[in-house]
Length: 239
Image (cartoon, rainbow, N blue to C red; front, side, top):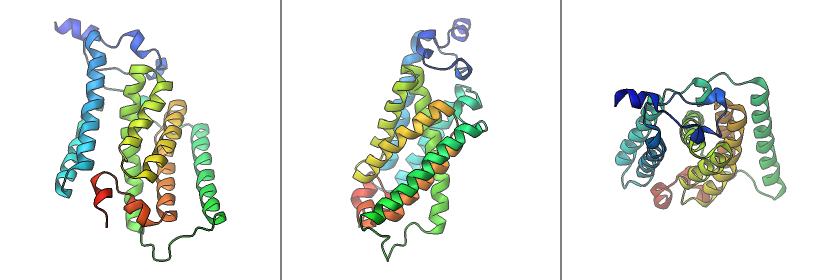
């Protein structure tokens, strides 16, 4: 039994969409069960994240949030993936330049568009503060790790990289319900992030642009609509 489990990893069909250099050195799971095991990881991790978003009190939400992050880290580590597959290797200059260039251009376009349509930064805006902005940069890195290193990689293993872009992006946007602005923005943003990850395989430039875009939206959007960028029950309870 032990020998069979070690020799039976991911079947060629299941990794058809993954470049050879990025194929995971997976946990020893029988090939017939691997697909169900990967789906179980996705479902459990997303369920924990939803509990962290929708739990009735802040203390319970924080507890579920910690459980979700620890669970994702454990599931990543037991698969023993390479740093390149996780997107944690040093970014390649060309790929990083493309991501940062498109991201910066988008930020400039958003500012110009708001100015052209007569919008302005609310005079009484206190969000985001400098302290919260730095915290959001760190949170952007955590989100990109969960989105790309965990969810995208698993969807890629199951259905190939092209389908994984749409599947991971849709899941990411769903986690931002019921905020209409963030749900729409994160779907569009995640499609870009996942496609750039698929091409260039690094979460560092993605996290930088993720933070810049998120903070730009926070500054340019009235808090009466954005609700301090809260999602889930926090968005509904915002006053």
